[in-house]
Length: 149
Image (cartoon, rainbow, N blue to C red; front, top):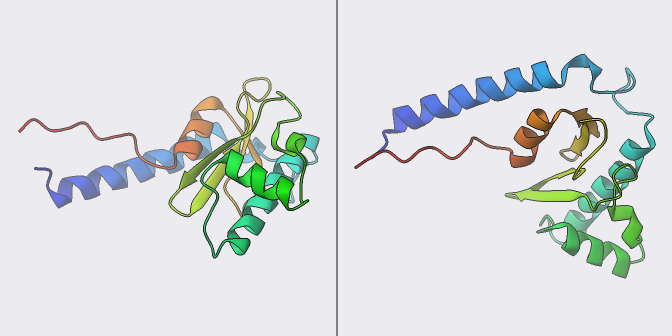
């Protein structure tokens, strides 16, 4: 059995690693402007999907969409968006929506020039390297190795 102290140490170690990785891989160059919002058309396009996910939560008693298809179906059926709004303007692929509890993380599937936009609502889209992107998308520690009994 894993002791609570060991779990706490692992969680703290991951948190320190995560923050360090975000600083190293994202750094001050993530945003295109000093105001925190990007002038990149893709960031604006992705932000629309973020706003739709927040509207979805309000319309569904605070429950986040389970996946991109649920959000797309709701938005299209309610006249708030079109199917094309859920595809990246850069890689032309559907966005990735990952639910973590009642929060979502939304990002590009492939991106451009080894960078992908990602956002955790209600934040702003940020361009990240693959490693930073995967850490944000998965929003948690890698699965702990099982200790032998």
